Length: 196
Image 1 (tube, helix red, strand yellow):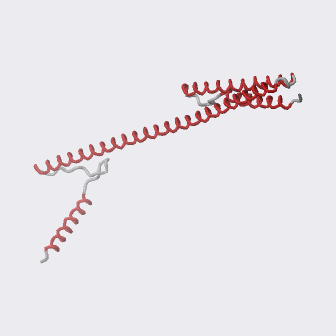
Image 2 (cartoon, rainbow, N blue to C red; image 1 turned 60 degrees about the horizontal axis):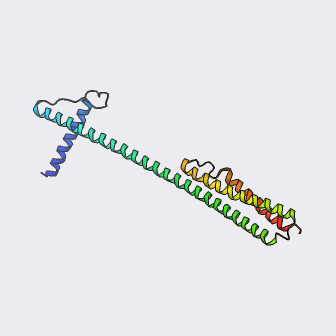
Image 3 (spheres, helix red, strand yellow; image 1 turned 90 degrees about the vertical axis):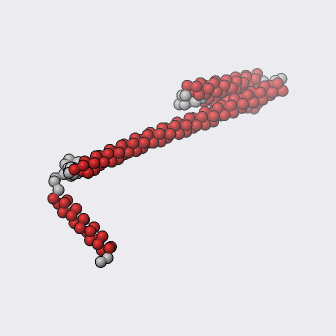
């Protein structure tokens, strides 16, 4: 007789016996499991206790894994929030840097325009009619106003950085500086074109 066939026959018998027991078992309780049967004797008690210990250990391990997963989710969410905040601050810094560069360009242009109009007045003062001098002086005032507006707007940007109010970084001073610069340069050019 072959030993392998004997083992297969024994396995088939055990499987058949387990299948017949399942059909004859008592109804299941609310957890869906069959009620625990207490095996007779000391071996049954030890087996029941070991089963309880294993179930408790598994439950504790699952609870610990669940807590670890929740902690990891919270850490990932916190990291995502930090990255979004850093990105928001970087974008804000770039906007303020661009606005500050624009205001510095306006201030430099206003200063160069004012200095060039002073040179024009110095070289052509005797040949200029009074109307041309008045227009040139008005251009000076507008260019100086543009320069002052650019400086005020730059100061407002510094206050924006401190207060973190990014709605309008340069405010009305930045827009006024641009329009005063354009008007001042236009009046200076017009004063040069007036007939002598």
